Length: 214
Image 1 (cartoon, rainbow, N blue to C red):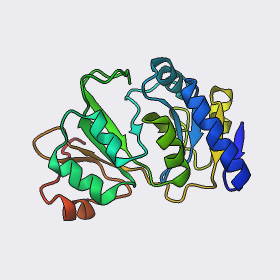
Image 2 (image 1 turned 180 degrees about the vertical axis):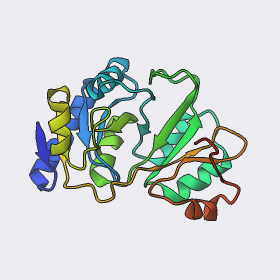
Image 3 (image 1 turned 90 degrees about the horizontal axis):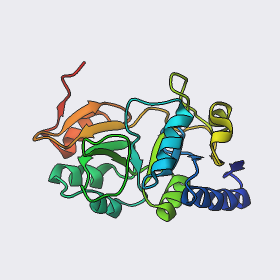
């Protein structure tokens, strides 16, 4: 079902429905500060699999969205100072960081490398959901090979009944993808430059470099 979160009453119903759906292992579509995302409880393996299946398969593990900076500390064993500085400067916002997650976490994101992509989005609807559900595996709300959804209605055209609740909040304000910084090695590395440019990142972490992979 689609809920128009631009209406206060529908927003409350939609957020409640989304929270219930995630807790039941179902999928939801929600707005972020980039494009719309389709998400599931990160700690429910069959829900993560349903997310991958809904998109038509994927070669990469879905990123994890969180509703609070403090949640990050519970997901990682240690956090480099560069990661803390970047999070302080750009979260919530369009910055995804790659970090080594704690080995004790009971989740299955489809990758056993021990690395997870984490972001805290700058969107009130997404944050309200995430603060109740906890970490969610979230990928762009579109089928593989098709355009990213800029509205929940566009996502519904592609994902249809595989999703329990669609939260509509109008067109994506900034459809540029998030910038991704790898913080698992000795030197912080930009692996994808998106909404946050390299110059801005280096104002916070001067030693940051660009990936040499084409």
